[in-house]
Image (cartoon, rainbow over all chains, first blue to last red; front, side):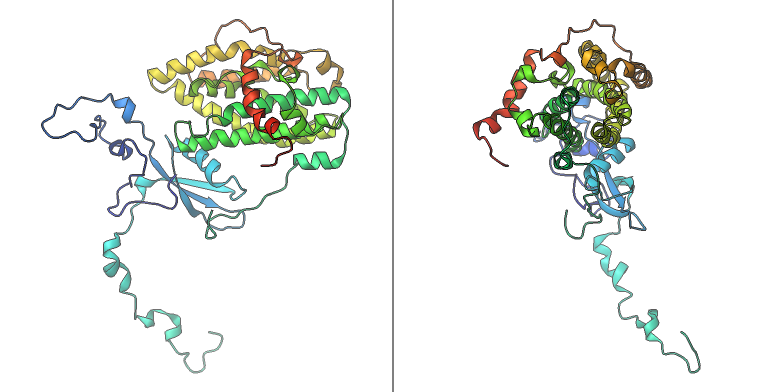
Length: 145
Length: 272
C-alpha cells in the first residue's frame, strides 16, 4: 500500500520502497532480474525467475461513500490480480464503514499529466477572466439571469 | 486516515459483546456450554491467524488475515460473554483464566499455521463450516445466540470468499503452489470430521443449537465446488481422534494458550 501515489513523474508505475523486484513490478519482460551490485565484466549468475518475479502490481483504489455521488481516490495497494485487488481494497479502505462501492484500476493504466509541463498545461487560463460568468455584466432588461 | 480522507468513517450499528453483557440475560448451563464451544473455536483460530501479521506474503495479506482474526475475536467475545453469564464470569475470565483442558475448541483450529497454503486450507474448512453453522444458528430459539450468529454469518461469508480465492490461485498457480495446496489439504482433512460430530449436549439443546451433523451435506457441497474449480480433490485421509469438545487437546493448544494468556496472568487486571 502506498498512500496517495498514482503514477510516477515519467508516467511509469512508481517503484515502491521495499519492492524486491522493481523490474518485474511493471510487468517486465519475463527475464530474470540480475543481482544488485553486479559490476560489468563479472559473470552474472542467472537468478531463478519465480523467486524474484513475484512482486504484485500496483492498483489504485476508488471508494464511493454511502452519501457520495462519485468514487473518490482513496489510495493504492498491491494485489496479484483484479479480483484480489478489489478484496484487498475492501480490507484496507472500507474497514471503518467508509464505503458502499469500490473500483480498482491498474496503476499502469493511468496516464498522468507531466509535472514539468505545468506551465503550458495549466497556467494558460490565468488572467482569462472572460471565461468566467462573473466577467460579464447583465444586459439591460434581462431578468432572472 | 487524514482529515481530507476520501472516505467517511462511522462505527455503524451491530450487536457488540458489551451489549450482551449489559443486557443481563443469563444463559442456562447447557446453552453456556454450547456457546463456549463456538467461542473457543473462534478465539483459538484468531490467535493462530494473528501470528501472520507482519509475516504474510504481502502487507495487503497481513491486513486481510488480521481482519479475519479480528472478526473471529469479535465472535469469540460475544459467545464467551454469553457463556460466562451462566456463572458470573466475564469474557476475559474465560479467555485468560482457563487451562488447556477447560477449552472446548475443535482440534482443527489449534493446528499450526504451517506454510501459507496450510493456513488457507484450515481457513477454507473453518469458514465454510462456520458459514453453515451461523446460517442455521441465526434461527435459534435462543435470541442471544441467534443475534450473534446473524452478525457473524455475514463476516464469515467474506472469510469463505477469501479462502476460496486463495485455494483457486494456489491450486491453479505454479507446480510449487499446487503441490503445497495438495499437501495442505492432506494435513488439514483429518481434523474436519470432529466439527460435525454430534453429542449429547448439541442434541439436548434442540432448536436452541444446531446439530453439527446436519451441516455436513451443505459443507461438502460448498467445499466440493471450490476444489473442483481449483482442480483439486478432497483428500482420502483417515480422521484424527478428536476430543476437543471434551477438553482433550493436542500438544499445540498448550503453547498457544501460554502465549495468549501470559500477559493477563503476569499482570492480573491490567488494561491495554
